[in-house]
Length: 209
Image (cartoon, rainbow, N blue to C red; front, side):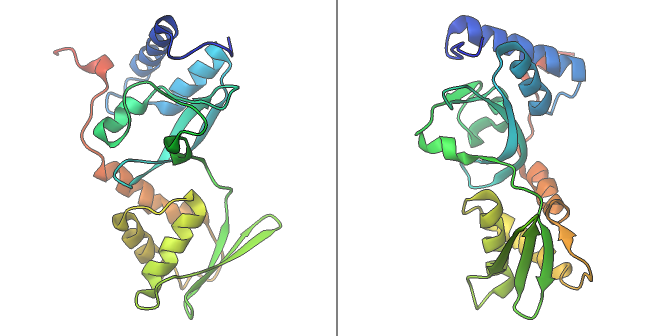
């Protein structure tokens, strides 16, 4: 069913059924369950699951999100409802070429990061690839360095709240004797994104109790 049209009412109804089944099975009312829902959709329709980052409308980042991609490159996000007014709707389809298509980024490869506080600069290595990251703000060197680091990972300029926290993480870890895996540096940003999100309960759990 790879050629199924997610905007077709019957296909949309089936997507909502799959989403509801996964969410009710997992029993986590305030979690969109994007990973498990996208797995179920891949099994049903053959649309490959992708996971990575999503830049929201307020320039904050959802650091852990999964969606599906049709053969024509269109993104199908069956759990967009969890982002409420920070994103585009409930079950959404975004065709290639739409400006919002680029808001979905496949998770970057894991980098091993060495922080040189004398610059400050970051020495990044992933396999045979290396990058040297230098800050872009001499008046706020850690903030500028964090902005360049997050831009490398996400491809986007993001909210200053994100950059400020990333700068504090980099500065705090600058004395580490060994390279640091990038997911370890990003973990505080993941926690921040959860705390900044608005309270939400999935529609499947909203019946009175």
